[in-house]
Image 1 (cartoon, rainbow, N blue to C red):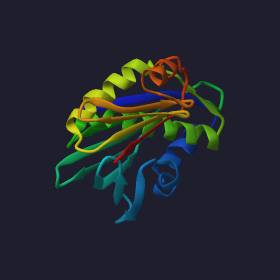
Image 2 (cartoon, rainbow, N blue to C red):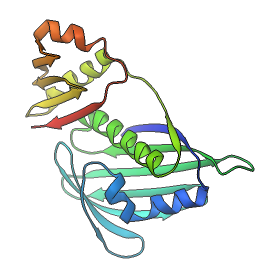
Image 3 (spheres, rainbow, N blue to C red):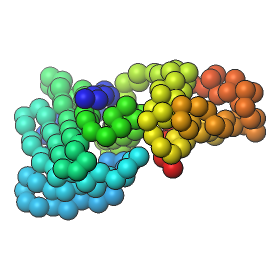
Length: 206
């Protein structure tokens, strides 16, 4: 099973954060890749995501004293998704440390690592925008990111398009098909690209 996490600090009441994360109406704004939500009852709903394929999960949500969990299954192809937000409150101040975890098992699991990272970081960014907070950065080098997508493209039939700011790499069948960066192509573009730090990352699947 794939498991990823991000951490941050939010200046807001703990129960306010937990109740907002529990509310499926906020997920429509905060969950990247989400296409639609259909509420079934107080605890259950259906969620459809579009990442490198379409996922239709039957979801259940639970609210605890320091944690919210949204988890679901898809029958065919068989897949499991779990999203957890854990809060660690400060004493005598309206401020909490927050840990956001995503778990996934199912088709093309190796391919899911980068989309999950982007999904979790985007969620934390949305929380920070709603309240007052900051992300705890865990930096990944561009080279390791490229190597991950090279491996992932071996299992994916189409093209993986990785954007880092204005630079683009197209991966297909375990190879870099095309590289462009600041008007440069090929090896020159790659040399420019690996110098990047704190780039805005986006991934597409064709």
